[in-house]
Image 1: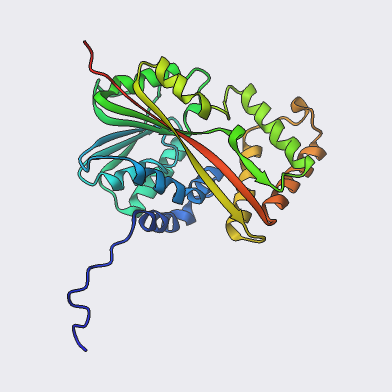
Image 2 (image 1 turned 180 degrees about the vertical axis):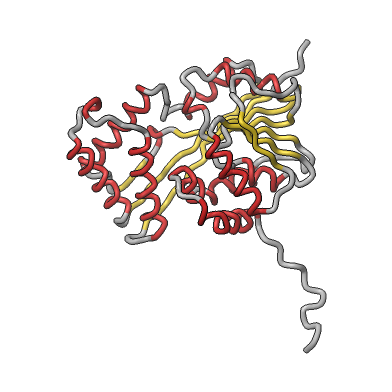
Length: 291
């Protein structure tokens, strides 16, 4: 019957569907492991963004925005507001611009900036957020103090970050793979990066002067089916992440053969039936009014 759809509510894309469509549109131009990792974790990112209480008019700053994986869904959540993503990686910022363009967003921009000297006036934002940023800070306080400076009184600072010590896998990785993962953690620590920063966020926020600090643990369970495409992709991303880190096998007590064997075992372990639990730590604190 003609007009049979009259009166039915319009079907609206969810935030997750919009983001996944944007990744699909921009995927042909992107090859970095960081981009692929962002695409793999898009569902978890959207769930985190949707859990936030945000005004549609909010002004948000994303520090260490990378490929825009956090800034773009934040901009979707504040259609009447504005989001700025800052980073020092020009290649990542270019990818972020392409992702925003694929969604068709007009309320987000990306700038090159140093987190320790943010180019914004005091109290410019309602929320200053970061995702996987503090793990890269040898001393997190200078950047945190800048984040506090540019957020308004009564506004919030938010951090989402990792803690490898809270991850679980069963069956456990084979010995060769476990040795590579431990070597990678040691290498990251030598470079001043902290893969267990999640448990420290409460202390970091309190030392930075924030009040009403709360830390939530966000579990990401995954029951991996053998041969699952996402598991294969995750295995490749992990290999590229370790390789791109500049890990020196000899410096970490491994031969090149042991490194390659461990990486191959790691990839194979991701392609087997397994349970994996990764944990994100989500910290939020409030900037009190001065005086």
